[in-house]
Image 1 (cartoon, rainbow, N blue to C red):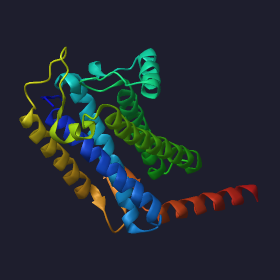
Image 2: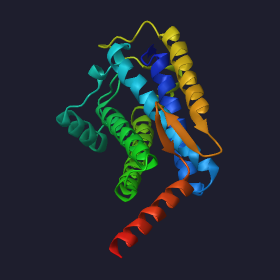
Image 3: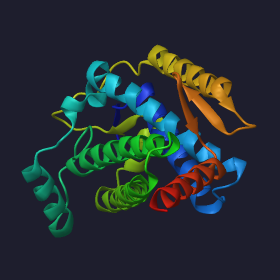
Image 4: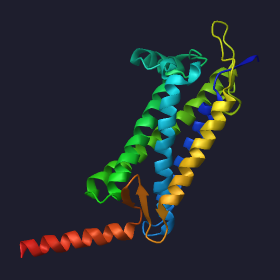
Length: 245
């Protein structure tokens, strides 16, 4: 089975870091008590995810052919035909993102940005009920998108036997006669991607105070500990009761 290069290093690094950080944030959010100091890492992971998305958006305009958003298949009619063919017959093969994976990626990007925004709003002392509910809904949407994406990969492999699952590991896919792969995997850009990400990790670590569980994010103090939020909520309730009296 002849293969051709499709996904460059920055695209693959983003994919695996994005997946790992979401998994870490989700596990922490589901298994660690809100008042635990470990819960702060749920929020730190979320901030790193949105930073990675910013890098990915930039790469989506300046990256190699199949990393660019212009290669995504986002026409609704094409998605409908792809899903119908998946049920009725073999789907059309794409060298880059197919319609289903294009929409899955878009949904995950939007959900992750929404998760970061609502998370920051919660940690900056804003009204939390609405943001908490929205945050939870977006997390479930993201999880459904991930599960659907994984099921789609397995289903595609069973249909075509082309080891699609390995394309984000070695960057290669089964060649198509009318499509040309990329000639440069952008290793230097991949190294820069890692360096910039490590610098972001370093910045968060330097700005995070483990004693108070607060993060100074570009001059804005975010409270990453649940206890402080509860204390603030209690004070607000007491003030409200005094006003009523």
